[in-house]
Length: 467
Image (cartoon, rainbow, N blue to C red; front, side, top):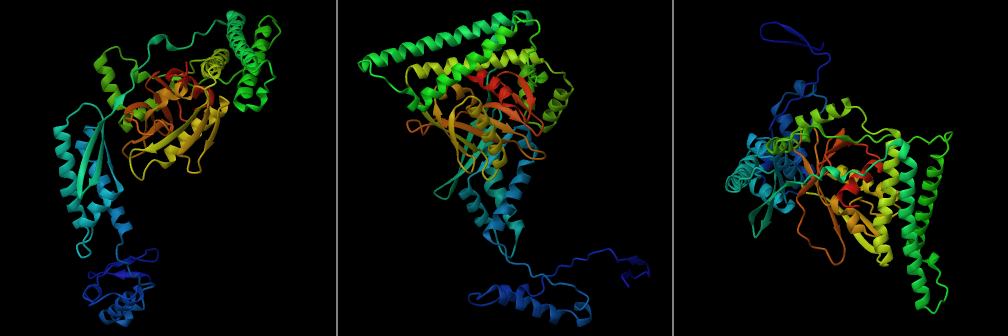
């Protein structure tokens, strides 16, 4: 009848209710078996028989299904351990100290195996985590006090937990005059002519280099088209020069309509505009708090666009020439650089989506700058061939901090390496901070929507070292 009547005669409608009942019937028989267990089916049979012996047939017939819970395996134990550690990180001490805890997989397994007891269940594991990790981290935080955010790594060496604390620094902001000088609209023609003269100077340097090469080969004809990097770079210069020449000629014609560029969405960060140094430091600490990131996103979306279409066109043209000028330094030295851009999370088993986001961002940048590259399937490495790669990306190396709702921030480390520089001291400077809506660059104090375009991103790369 789908009704439940209690001892006082009150009736409750049970027509839309699912009842889940648990029992440890049969558990004592399973745990008390002698010898080795032959199969999981044997345990199921024991549990089923225990249920039939314990309860009446009238009751069992009203149960739709009996689910036999399987014993916890190592994968489940590690999952429980991660949940307990997540709870540990939510305590006030970690939040106030802006601590990011990272436990090596073998260290986590060691703690989990020590703490798990089949009879005591998850509570025993929780007590072991308190004993092994909470006391260790508390002692280290007290003895290594710092106002800076810290990355707290725990490793396993010779059956002992070994802590390592790394202080995180915010990258220093640039001087106020770093931004490319943009002309007034009426000065656009002169601006483009100046950029064209820069490209012509590069072309003359290339011509001198090629003439010298021809002379060294007794004026035998050298086919540079077979050198894909050489040919591609010269083509890029020619294309850019042609486009700028078209724009400069257009500024002489009053009827010329410049094709509008999509305005840049980069805006100055309102939380970093304080004049007092102490206030600035306090604001930086706030970037580890979800509330501050939410506030920043709201302010960003309420702020009007700061660069119009023409200014954006001027800036894009300036950046195109600036990057070509940078690449020409290694081009003239005939120095092709081969690097691997490696993206890795500083917290185990977290950050894969954030790594993929950064990988796609850099892939689009390299395509925009005409740089040869290959992305691995897991999007954790980008293999790069090109000119002045180290100078271009030096400002990107460090920590990119991602905020997720209701979680501790995830630091993603960007590393540039080659065969000669496999092991380098990790860069613990925080370059940018990201959330689901915006990203903020600490070097330029600029904030942008999270779906940043390659043109907008190129300005941040230019500021970091691509000048």
